[in-house]
Amino acid sequence: MDRQGRSNADGQRLGARFTVGFDLDMTLIDPRPGMIAAMDALAAQTGLPLDGAYFADNLGPPLHLVFRDFGAPEDRIPELVSRFRATYPEIVIPETVPMPGAAAALDAVHELGGHTLVVTAKHEPNAARHLTALGWEVDHLVGDLWAAGKAAALREHEALAYVGDHATDVAGALAAGAVPVGVTTGPCDADMLTEAGAGIVLSTLDEFPAWLRGHLCAT
Image (cartoon, rainbow, N blue to C red; front, side):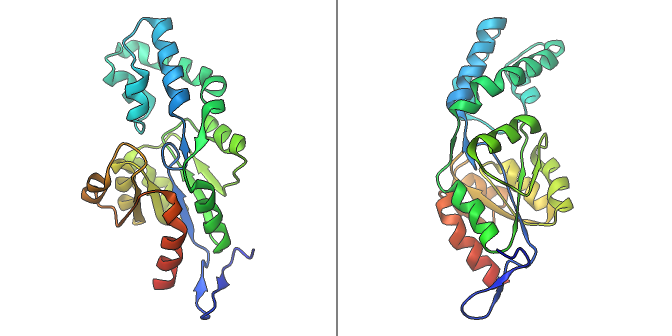
């Protein structure tokens, strides 16, 4: 496929050097079973009140904020982050599955001549392990960015749109001047995503290829 773009049946040029960004957790992947196991294991090891099920139901914030919300002592948070990340590859990666339509959404960007960009709050080495385990090839990966901080990567790669399941993903897209595309597969429902400023809200990524084609034809 020529990444410079292609023409559809009506002669309209699609996908000329555009980039679409995607969040990772609960947008492209579902890591919840492994997240529960990893957090509960850390709770057992440390004696701290770390609730794996609650953590998995509210994925999005970076780990230091998660541990702070659980009431972990501030001076222990760096250690907790390191310990969680160290067990992540063996506990979380094998239990993670793709979200519905994720692979097709990534493929649609490439088929229309675009580039794929994953921007996530997840520690970048572990994010890369997820992509490798699922056999996904993306053009760019940027980790360790949260909320409006994601705008730096989106601006650098001139993202046309950013797809995410969290209101903070919408904030990142808006800060970067990218189209905020919400997907209701995470902790935020359609009303929350719309109120945050999402320009379009999808039920799953199964709906994304049709939206992208329509958006490119309209611009």
